[in-house]
Image (tube, rainbow, N blue to C red; front, top):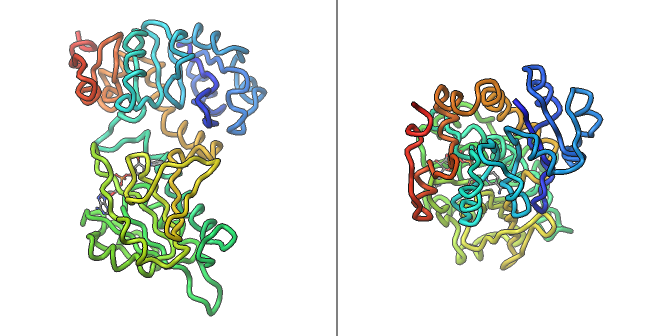
Length: 371
Ligand SMILES: NC(=O)c1ccc[n+]([C@@H]2O[C@H](COP(=O)([O-])OP(=O)(O)OC[C@H]3O[C@@H](n4cnc5c(N)ncnc54)[C@H](O)[C@@H]3O)[C@@H](O)[C@H]2O)c1
């Protein structure tokens, strides 16, 4: 199959759809990979490295879209890419259709096949979202530690303390993918960590897998209110699938915290789980309210594109290989996880929630892929 990897042109996006290692696997499987000049540079991959594994480098984005039967990207196409997309072309990337009618309309119009990373679903899990949650969770602790420093406006405490000095108290609310990684990082730095979740099975799992300086606790408003008084760093990673994040820390709870406490709201991309959070960017990541530092970057993995790109390709590559080897139709007939990624096929919306959000006609995917 002819595969194209364009340079991401959405502002602040430094990742790339395929690493040289991923491209090498696709080429070894007999496929042709064209990569746009400079596409991997911000993730740490030179054109020379792509060339070495057999990729062809194209100067212009137009050439990539013109060549490709499958385009592998990171972010949804933006306005200037819409006219480049060809009917029947397979687009394999994050789309997040429900957040943009304009994008949905444009992709319907393009008659392309849109397979969205975020809805590929395997046994109830979202394998192409997990790596970004892992990165964001780990970064949450790293960023939190930084903003706890006095020059940043923080409490002035070292997460691990030193000999004879108590470590910082870290509360992680939400013990899923991101929360587990955040807690592990904080524990590794020597902090005293509590991790809260409402799912008892998850708490049991955390109890037997977490190091001894992490205490899993059942999450409820009473416990959160108690814990905020002693926590120096609070990381919010709750997710209720299909809903906005619940506001677990309210505005009137801020004055119960120690001045210089840091709140990192990883769930900000779903509206945030702290009432006073607001979306921020890597250029200006924090706002201080009532002496409490709020970090609310909506695209945390974007700050570490090398790690994020490699983690993403590790997760997408087997799916990309299957799509390239079998063609999207057969691959989606044979692989239920991939089939769930199909959102729009040649002008028809085949993902129910997207059709519902925008009141568009819905077509059952099986009627289009199973003869
Ligand atoms: N800001 C970013 O850059 C970024 C990057 C990646 C992911 N995210 C976001 O991070 C959030 C977490 O993602 P995830 O993959 O870890 O989700 P997940 O489903 O693995 O974990 C969410 C956890 O929250 C728990 N939970 C639900 N309600 C709770 C409550 N009231 N109290 C405590 N725990 C509760 C669930 O039981 C679950 O274990 C999502 O909103 C995701 O969109 C943000």
